Image (cartoon, rainbow, N blue to C red; front, side, top):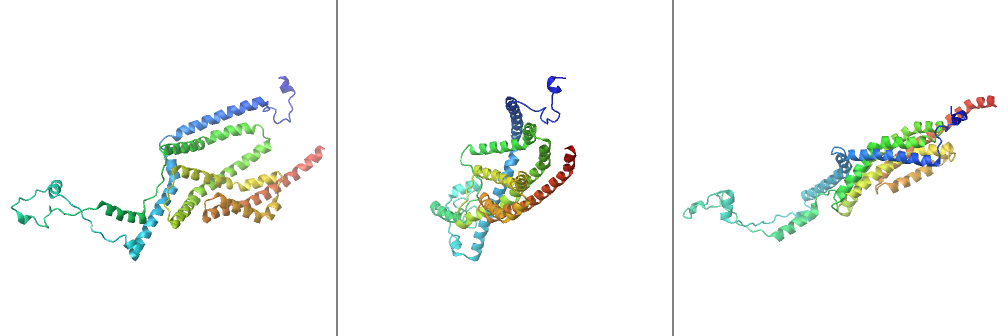
Length: 356
């Protein structure tokens, strides 16, 4: 037995994990390098055609679907005005004489028709299938007519790139996010292995208890944002373009930033019960304080939802209502946690008195 083991304090919970400052730095460096290796492997996997490309299509699909709906609705509006006899539409849609001139010899050559001899004048009639249509085309006038119609219907809006590098950079960002997601189990394990060495057993128990709940709440916020909020938000924002008569021109890079940031904000916002539980554990707030300040909290969450979501009342409500429900859940969790702590205190007090 070594001298260190002989004089080791049996009540010292960190006897096997205590390190110097330099050892801590070295351990942190080692864990970060291992986490970086996990991210690199996940990043390389994301370049496979069946990983990165489908994820990018999944991110693009909500905005592309709403852009198609925006265009189809505009076309339907023009069609309804056309049926109702709206003068602004009927004037543009008036029939115009289109005159195109063909050379008879060229037309016969293209159609593969043999022209009759000069003495066969009876065959040169307007009902013969090979007779050329003599007309004239005025390009400027036709273009002017088409431009007026184009102003009413417009082109189908799509996600666009503004530089030759934008598509490549967007794909790199998507692969980076996929790399973090694929390597997240290994990355979080390395971070946990470094942090857990300095935690007490009851602190580790709290992490094991509340980390799954935190993950469930985060994923609930992300899925709600992705499948419910984002489509409605895009629809509402495109409605403003339609109302103001503006043509939407969305950039792929800007949409990617929006599509990644908003679900992250929703996921973090759904951590409200755990934040309330933490404030109660450190003694800043208690159950009665949370109940007394319920109205203030609801107002603050409404302001937060209005700032963080797009300019759309429906998106704000879809974030604010769940946060209010989670606030009430947080009150119940704080109440239950306080009751559990009192029960544990009642059980341990007689043992402490006997020990004294």
